[in-house]
Structures are given as C-alpha cells and as structure tokens.
Image 1 (cartoon, rainbow, N blue to C red):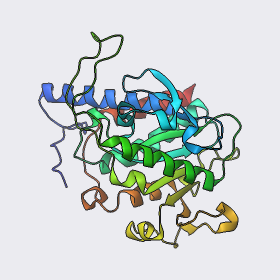
Image 2 (cartoon, helix red, strand yellow):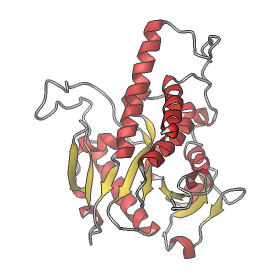
Image 3 (cartoon, rainbow, N blue to C red):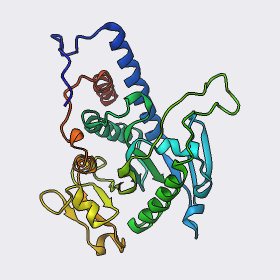
Image 4 (tube, rainbow, N blue to C red):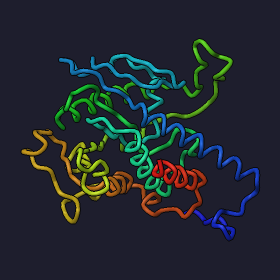
Length: 290
C-alpha cells in the first residue's frame, strides 16, 4: 500500500506545485480519454456467418475513427486494448447522463485499486467499452463467441506491436513517434462483463445489473467468484449454453473487485487524493442541476 501524501486543511495533498500540476494534467488527460471512449465505444457491426468478419468501428491509436472487420485489425489497433483489465459489453443504448454516471462509478472503483505498473497518463484503465450496434440483442453465448474471437486476434497481434509508436500517416507533425510498451493484461482473455440495463432502472449496475462471464470454472474459482450473498450463478435457462464458460450476476463494484482479486496489491485501496475525482464531483453536481 502506497504512503498517503500529507494533506492540507482542505484535504488536498501538500505537494510541490510542479508535481501537482503534472498530476492534474495527467489525470485530466486520462479521464478525458475515458469520456471519449464511453461516448464512442468500440461498435460491433451486424452479425456475420464468420464472427471474424464482423465489422468494428473504433477510435484508432491516434483517436481517428476507423472501421474494419475483426480479422483485419492491425497491431497498432491492438494498442487500444492494452493495459485494460477487461471488456465491458453493452447491448442497449445509454443516454448521455447515464454514460457519465456509469463512468463515474467505474472510475471511482478503479482509481484506488488501479495497477501501478502504468501511470494514468498512458492508457491504463479497468475497462474497454464495447457496444453491439443497431437493434441487435445478442445472446450471452453470441457475446462470448465474439469475445473469444477478439481475444484470439489480439493475442495474435500482440507480439507484433512495435516498441516505437508510429507517426500519424497524414499529420506527422502532430503525432511524433515515441517509445512505449503495450501489452494485454492477463485478465482480458479470462473474463468480461455485460451490462444488463433495463428501462425502469438505468443505474441497475449498482445492484445486481451486470453479468460477469469467466472463461472457465477454474478462472471463476481462482478469482473468488462463487454463489453467495449478492452473487448468484446464472443457469443455462437464463444465459444459454456457454460451453466451458460460466456466468454470475452481481453488482458492478463486486465484479470489478473479483476481476483484480488475483493481484494482492490491488485488493487494498490506496489512500490518495485525486484531482480529477474532485473535479468530477463538481461536474456531476452541476449536471444534476440542469
């Protein structure tokens, strides 16, 4: 557990102005990236007889919109999935304020439990937001099949990700090449979360409104996921045949804790001041007054 920074009377840490400015900019840049991603998640196109041919619309490494079938995504596209703990799938549209409320809950749970191998400024986050497009209401087995194909492709590409980041193909003066390591987190292939939203309770993820789907029974057990308390196992009549995978229903917070539970350093929340979360409090309050 990291040491707590000495606080001033107003609760903010007393740290050098230069370090404070660096942290504020870093957190603001990181948070703005997550806002863009939840506004415009990876869009999964119409069903196809070959799951690898389903088109994806997403922001590429430079933030430009790209569209290509799953089997044609590139190593640079793969960077956008790196350093994420898992994918969160949504099968229904979310309004602007619902998205903000959801991101707020994800960020507040993730920040004190975040992995420290990567700073907030370089892409590390809990979720990669995914959305099935149009009116499609895919079954859980369809989502599981797509996720398995996605992970297979990403793992195939991971070894080809260059340590040197690329220049922008048409605006090289705006994006200078750099050096950074990009890797998929181990949990991304082992688990994913599905939002089970309903019209009557848009913030149902706070209760038992998410499904957490494990690649196998062994992975569920290893991550301390079992029936009991608020966690209930989904039977085949509810989710269909998932093969070796298994699904449980619980709250988003509980699901997030289970996903990172194998990293003992992340199970204990760090006591740290977050400039962005203080700003987010103000933003949420202002939005609620509109």
